[in-house]
Image (cartoon, rainbow, N blue to C red; front, side, top):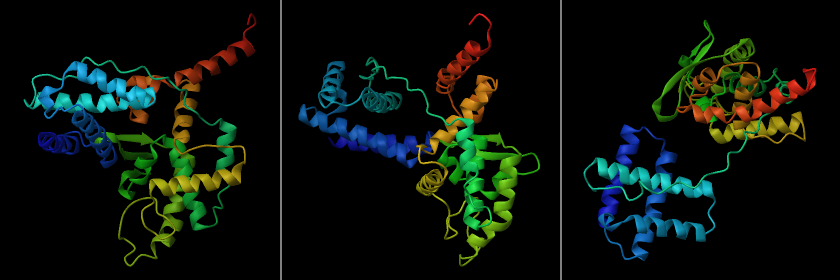
Length: 302
């Protein structure tokens, strides 16, 4: 199985350098390929060249026996298909045994979002007289006001903000950049946070200009994804005991509310940083329900 390890190392370099995938994504790919390598050992298959379509079907059967969900199986097959496709491209293999494997259809779940009245509750609970309260207010405003991912938010630097035209430069998945506009509420919250709270929080550092990340924690160092989740959970407790949300729901709410108000799909796709329009189209399930309610409420022959 030595050749698998060598080829896997080449694939990892490809994912990191050419595809600019995050370390988290790379680790997931490696895990799936190593799991398949274990399956090969069980089947006495020593080389990747020996893998046939029948072996891939046998592997799928094994995954189903282990009660994996359709979504999980799709992820595993997708990783292996990419791995073998890379090997064919590099001339290491003649064909991709996973090219003919059809991915199991996954259930399309409607994204969960917050109604505007629920969002408003979150904007009222931060104590904007304190540094952390100002930080929290700016955080909620920018997440909901731009629809960016939490990981993207944590990586914003002060130099990425342009207050003159109200935009932020976001570094998205795969190293792709996009500019997102933000409104007056986010602008006001960000200005207050930067001028007052951020200076106070970073003053604890040995050198206050030690880093230029926008959002910081109570120690003045960069705020992490986990930190954002903790902050939101605390704010939700204060806002309402009936609200159960996760950070991504602010992104879902951003997209849903834009579409409900008439924004076109392509513009929302660009704002969200989706590569494929199909990723944005999941929000139409929500907006269709919204349109139906309007129709039933206002059409004279409904």
